[in-house]
Length: 223
Image (tube, rainbow, N blue to C red; front, side):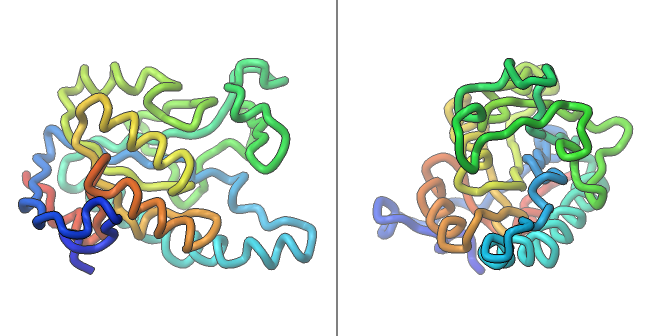
């Protein structure tokens, strides 16, 4: 993969290649979005189980192992590691945003102390890692993350997580609107299908972020 030419939309099909990217460690954080227990539970219904199996396979075989490596490598390079997770403060979820109260697949009732709302065991945050809880798609608009990033002097945010076309995309767009330089590690992300994943990366790339592989992202970091 070459991040300079991959994932191009109609708008950027003929655009010149972007400049080489440098991410100074003291100005860059890794943000891991919504890789939580609830999404790793296989549906009980056989047909739904079959429908979601490709997603679960990608999570278990690609996204979680790659994100583990990304976390470890970023920590070694001196980056702050942040996590965002969907979790409400009230047991009945009255504090959730409308998008999480609507009926259907996106209806989410995940009290902050519930097992389902926790980050998956393979990616458990360290003692000094920051974890923000949100009841919105965007981790920026639904938490104090904006303030934290500004207080720490952050200019660049590496994003990983799920779902590419929902919370990852919403967070990326919000960060870009706040003038953060955003990089998405594409092989540390997943959507319900690879088609949705690839299409969303094409939509956000070069407008709201740059999309690159995990190995490419690690090569951007300077210490």
